[in-house]
Length: 324
Image (cartoon, rainbow, N blue to C red; front, side):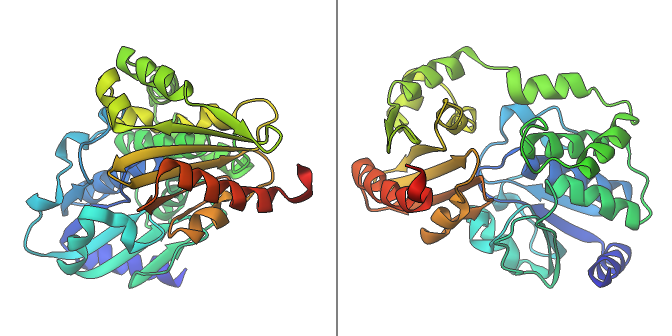
């Protein structure tokens, strides 16, 4: 409550804001930053919102998406930096310079690994998503949730709950969603854009990635690769690869799915997903990453795909214990 009161004072007294989330933005981060952007605009504030690289196409329906900037277009200074859905400042990537342009940092997040890097920290690891947290925050701040904000919050919540099928979905989650639907949002269209809509190039990329699939440890682990060459051959964009790791995890009897994605020469982004009992967050933390119990990631440098596979399998085998 104290941090909410401090946040309220900042919103009331400050005028210029920068809003940002982690690199490779997903539905929760995009929904969160654009919901806060709309909230601040409705409050009459001056706001710039940033992501690293291009805005993923599937989120362009959100109000404010066309206003998102790259960090090189930032102003000289802002009163406050709002960091959403980001457990560690290192995950800001190319947007890190924003921390030097602001007098105050507000950290709003739901990762259990959050480092409390803000001057004001509002962290709830029990929340399904930052969108769920923001719904409560807006109500506590006395702000009426508009249709624009509701669409952003729905995007955030439905994304991080996997369409309400992940175990982080609670009765509170569904109660909040029911309130958002009262704002007459086009939830069927949003759901389709997020989970069902595919480009032809995206399907081609999926085919190439799936062709690399192999299983280990009595079929409990499935690993796939995604190279830069595959992106070039398919014509797909990097954001179309975001959920491919779930294909590995969703195979019958598989407990852990892994996607090893080439970012640069000897630089790989690792996506980890588990189904029931393996805490992939602990594995990601070992390599400087983080995330949630069943969804986490990290970046590994100066190793080949084969070397990365070997070390990850050793870590996963320890987590599987006697199950295999």
